[in-house]
Amino acid sequence: MTIAFTPSESAPVETEPAVVPGPAGSVVVPEPSGPLMAEEPEFWEPSAPESEEASEPREVSESREAPDSREALESQETSEAQETSDPQEDHPHDPVVVRDALDFGVYARTGGWAFALKVARSVRPGGQAAEGTARTKVSAKAFAELAGCSPERVMRYYKAWDMAADDGLVPQFEVLVPGEDIELPDADVWLSYYTSRNSASSVRGQAISAAAEAEGIRPTKALEVAENPTALRAAILADPGTAEAARGALLDRMKEDPALQTEMARAFARTDDLKKAVASEAKAADRIGYVRQIVENGQIKTPAGQTVEAPAELRAEAERHLSLLDELDDSEEAGEWAGEAYDTVKGLVAKAVEEDPALRVQERRTKFYNSLQKATKVFEELTLDEVMEEDIYEADMLQRLEALQEAIGTCISALRKATTTS
Image (cartoon, rainbow, N blue to C red; front, side, top):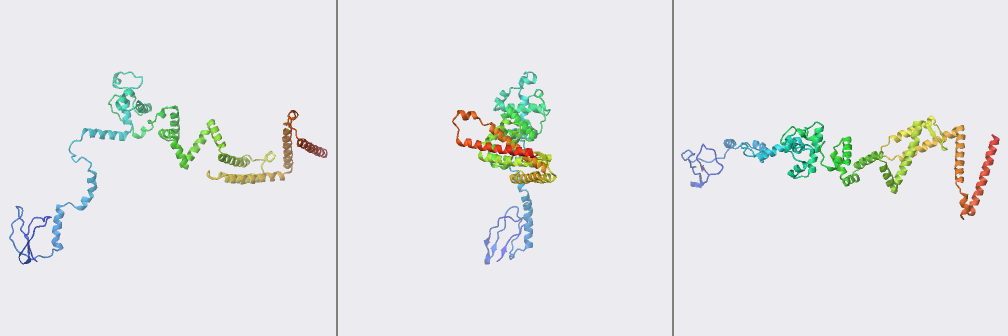
């Protein structure tokens, strides 16, 4: 099959030309018409497959007319980013848009200072006479009515500016003129002077703010927590870290708050589980204190209550146990370790008493005297008048007294015999 075509100097077009049947099964391509096409004589030429070399000029020609696809991909993101921009950049912007952009830039740099300046230069401080430039200034109430907000909100900005002025960060109210713009501090400084909470002005709020500053945090954070105790409770219940921080804060506060100490002690005493836990911890603390006293003072307390110098061996053993106790983490239970240390040291104390003859005699003498003193005190507390007045007598009372009398007589005889022998 042959194809007749008319060569042209013009670039190929995207649409294919129409074809008509030719003689002997050939296809005739009509000659393109138009003023841009040069006239060429018709001729017949057998068709041949188009080679790569032949197609190359066409591709080159197409590449010259269309932009490079790689460059188009690279510029795609830039084009998308510019979709929201004004397509007519050479035209002047709307003044309203310009003003909004400028206001946004000022706030981005200065934060709340931009609005505080509007209050500071337009609101007349209380007690200041309406003279000079102050004549055009208005009260906080009037300014709030114009702004469509509460006077309290205006005064919070007013007070923030006042505190910054006292620190020399911004000018005083008196020198500011309505409509005047000045250089403002950075936005990060604003939160150090402004609080959005009414509680900050109260005595309670001032105490919370002072404590927050002492801890190195913004007062607004502490005030927010103080105004939402339910949220604080939820955080304590759900988070061990928050509970630990709350525990430490309560302990620190109880050192200077006797009323809180009493309330906490009463709450623990009325809760069985907590009461048992407190008793267990108190017992462990007493045992640790017993061991620590031997290490720090170098003295031991005997079972009878005597205080004597601790032997070197006993003191070294007490120091070893105490070092183990001090190495325990706060999360570890100290009760078992304290019990082991106490039992070990207590056994060494009893051994030291038995190995020293003089100390052993003195220990027994002290023990006997203590028992005698207790018995005497108990007997002296018996009130015989009530026995005579009230019918409370029973037969076993007399029997017990007679047995006691016999024991006392035996004791007296033994002491007399010991005294004669010595």
